[in-house]
Length: 123
Image (cartoon, rainbow, N blue to C red):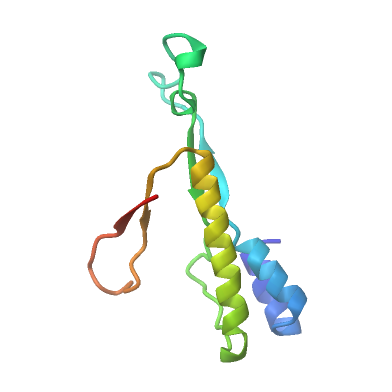
């Protein structure tokens, strides 16, 4: 199920428990793997394999799925459930970053219309 499928279910069914579970699933973070495509990057890493980092083979990021600039309108009655879902997904993203040995990450601003830089959080 993708973002647009979820939007259609919200229109059809409203904010049922099943739709809220699907919301958490659709907004769950995932690993994005970028394999080296450029000629210089497509070469195998130099050195012994035990000394090779996974970053030498592929770029791996933790990303949240996009809502394609088409956000849901969340009724006040389900804000606590949506907040809990967002919290669970943030915890999952933090664990995924830990698996990658990521010591810092950038967070978006709480003021999307202001021209400010993202903060760096050290874990």
